[in-house]
Length: 198
Image (tube, rainbow, N blue to C red):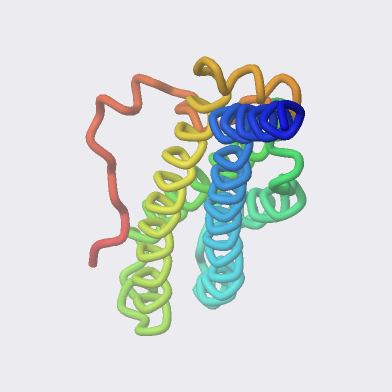
């Protein structure tokens, strides 16, 4: 009878210890971060797909500056060649490289949109106007997806660092995940210049 109580008490103690260790929380938070990351990459891919149509439309303008267009094409090629999967998100170098090439593409697109302002025929082109609207919407979707990813990673990283779940994180290898950062922090203080208006 005593051994039955001892075994039952031991099982209850183990269940209580495991329920407080955070293992299931790590599973949930890890999946949430992966899902959020997948949405970020989906939106970046949507932008890359739109750029093909944008470039084709701009090429139709006979006098358009080829150097600006070439930079967008090259930046798009770089951005689509670097892939960071949910499994490699723990690699800071890969994440920073991915973030850098996406930033280069954003910068090249901004320069393209500023250059377009000098071409009234191109600005008046309905197809180009539609692509600009779609691209603006995609940039907004990227910002929302990145925000959700940052929040998911923050929740995961807090769980990985707080006591006592940090012990579970060490035992099961749940290392903190990389999140987005701003390369040029001075840029945050300046209001954004949007080149998508008519």
